[in-house]
Amino acid sequence: MIKKRAKIILLSVLVVVSLFFLLEKNFLPGISTKSPSSKNLQFLGTVINLIKNHYIEEPNPLKTMEGAFKGLVDSLDILSSYLDKESAIKYKYQKEERLKETGIILYKKYGSFPQVIGIIKNSPAEKKEIKIGDLISAIDNSPTLPMSMLEANLHLKDKEETSIKLKIIGRNETQEITIKRKLLFEEPVSYSPLKDSSGILKIHHLYPPCVSKIKEEILPRIRPQKKTLILDFRNCFEGELEEAWRLTNLFLKAKEIGYIEKKGGVKEILSCEKEPELGKLPIIIWTNQATLGPAEAVAAVLNEFKKAKILGLPTPGLVAKQDFFALENGSALVLTSGIFHLKSGKKLWKSGLTPDVKIKREDQNDESYLKSTLVLLRRM
Image (spheres, rainbow, N blue to C red):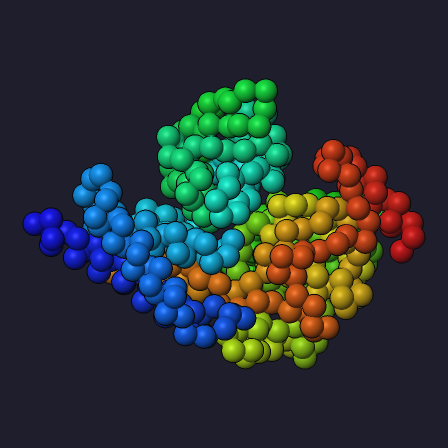
């Protein structure tokens, strides 16, 4: 029986190693395809034998394999993730129907605690006085250290308005806080008028039908204004690149706005070919450190084409294409399969956006943004 278990464990490790070479060959952009050296394989064999012969307990084969899969995938880059069955369901569901949330936006590197980089206004998290910079060590008694960034953010969500328990470090002492999730906004986008401008277009997320909602419900209010429009991307941390290009096309027409570089240097050219319905409007874009992914891409393209000025905080630089792969047991892989580059060739990956007008980190409130915007409007 022990020999049988050892063989299963060995098979699990070999499956994971095979997965690594499959990923390396097919999906990961910019990584070489050199064969592993015999020295590396010998090292792997040594590790397997040490576990098999000296570990105090018999490892659970299934748990060992899942842990190996997770460690391999999560360590690839900040956006790639191995999702268990529950997280995989949430990942697919959030694109179709909004989940209930706490209002916390987390940033997490592999092997570190997730850090709060954004708090959504009027959310349960804001009311509980959770602060930007706080570290979350556990979510509902599950340690966050082994989680990917995607997993950590998904753990904060649920289909129902349930409560969640967070362990927060980084203050004077570790605190345990219980927060009730709720639906933070009914629509993906909202609009509010602002004197001497065309108003503020707030993008909550860039999943469909965001752009359709703008066209149907908000464009009739914006078109007559013909003044500078404020595009608020603060805390816009989720969405799809395809929806980002549709939003960009509202303001810009171009045969090439940039490209996605895939494995082996293959380039997917991106374009905005329709006539822009708001092409003549000057734009000011608001960003903060929780402006991620698709929102970063829109801001960068409009800025490069001189259509927009960016005001706010630098962004993390997480503009990349991810592919979702469902596995037979209900779990899934989310893998980075391409890196976005601007038309100029500049990539935002790990570098992010540098605003034209910077806001101090301690001044991340509406009043500071509005004050700086009014100064910028006078110059435009």
